[in-house]
Length: 308
Image (tube, rainbow, N blue to C red; front, side):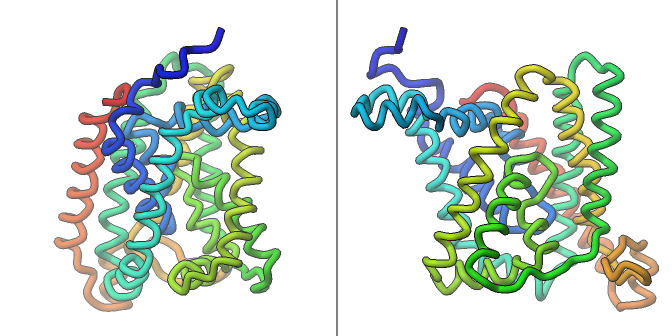
């Protein structure tokens, strides 16, 4: 039986908290190597987000055509989704230029901060894996290997065309909702990251609409698979997501050098970096790593359980 139309799900009334979660997700999604899905998980809304997305189905279409608006809003957790999307949009459109500037002028500092964020996030997810079993251990190992392979893959460039925005959106969104797999990094691998950022900064609404259409299509397809896995195989799935995070630490390691064979950048020691490229900013970078680490633990201690 349907709930009364006036009844809200937990946390919907706390709009500022949901909005802030969206801002955090948007900020994370802008940076290659950092996942908005990670922020959703450590702030306690990950499974609620997946459930809201999977509610977009045939039953919802029937509700819309029959003008059963209250039921449609309840099925999709509409207030929660709309507020979260607003926060993501605010973050993307206000921080895109700043993040681009920092990537160009202060890459070591920025990557150090996000390395601390992801390391702490991986440890947070590890705490949430219960009932360790052989499938969970295998999932953790495969997650590490998969994310490491992505991190060391050389980039290639899609041609800049309308269809490439759709393709980029489709694959990037699948990564964005996974903790540890960065949608922005997928865009880097596809050669579309600067192109999409330019579309955002110049307000190229046609290209952005194509990107959003691809993202929406990918989201509807992939979220159902993820929802099933979390429901039926929770511990192995969570362990795999944790492996993604640990493996993605290679992506955001601050000190990198061009690889000799693949053309991809590879992690190097701070000492090697200083001998080849100059100041490694070691102390400042370590301080930013610690700051990022503490920021995640603060978020997890505040929001790591059910929404508040």
